[in-house]
Length: 142
Image (cartoon, rainbow, N blue to C red; front, top):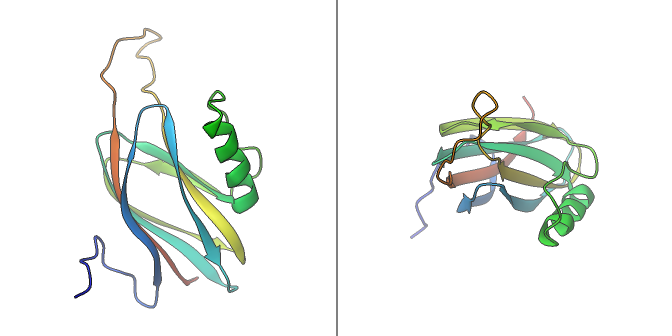
């Protein structure tokens, strides 16, 4: 028997990853690397976020690995040390997005940012831990 899929796979797409992850406040998870071998291909992501919203970035492998090394040395949270191919927000609940990519290898980086201060006043808030079910697929650009 095959394991149950969390999300229905898009027609003609190949599933690269299907998993669960937890992203704590002021932390990241680096998903991948994912290889795109053919032209006219898009990377598609389906996700279900619970607990706290996330932001994401898609970066080339060299940028993702340099960024991850900085993160692993407990350097202050900083933007990526190179170009971002795609980015956006993942609100609570389900979301889907896709980005056309050239052949290469890429990371999908998830970040749980701290809640912004309300009217400039910091109010103690419990940690918003984001739980994410996700599926990463490759398919034709359309």
